[in-house]
Amino acid sequence: MKSDRFLTAILIGIALLVLVSLLVFFARGSTQTYQPENTPQGVVHNYLLALTDGDYQRAYDYLAETPDKPSYDAFRSQLTNGDRFGNASVEIGEVEIRPDGRAYVTLYLVYGPSDPFSGAYRNQSLAILVQQQGTWRLLQMPYEFWSFDWYATESPAKP
Image 1 (cartoon, rainbow, N blue to C red):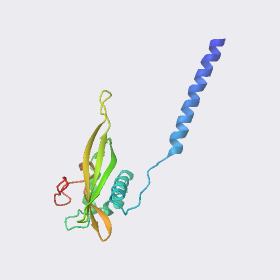
Image 2 (cartoon, rainbow, N blue to C red):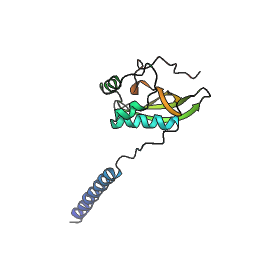
Image 3 (cartoon, one colour):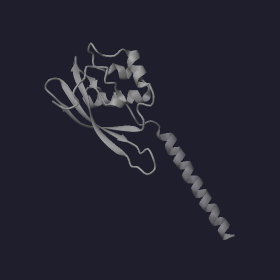
Image 4 (cartoon, rainbow, N blue to C red):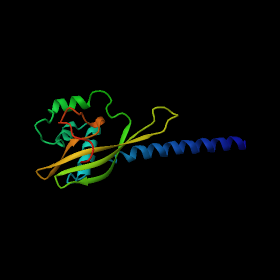
């Protein structure tokens, strides 16, 4: 009889843990919000958030206005082709703003393991922005979030 009560208490405890976990998961919702667009890191964050939210028009608006800017249709079709974002997450790192109106934002792309025996790995990359009419606009991002035929090739290394 005591073992039946003990087993019942364990099952009730498990059910409560599952219920609390589900409540926390659904109550949490999306914690990502758009940031102010007056900094290079804010523009990079907003561009990535717009892409993950599927707001391609907003993401497109963050691109620099140059003669070789892609059309919206080319932009959208390139980014919706396959699973471009994969299992990568992005950490925004240091920002260097140069006197020539360019900014270099260090990005750390973190990839989850593809199998249960591997660990996550991290690559460092750059986002290059230019200031146009007082606002920051993107010239280059890492491959997963960009297509290198959109703009004239920029050197990914800081000059």
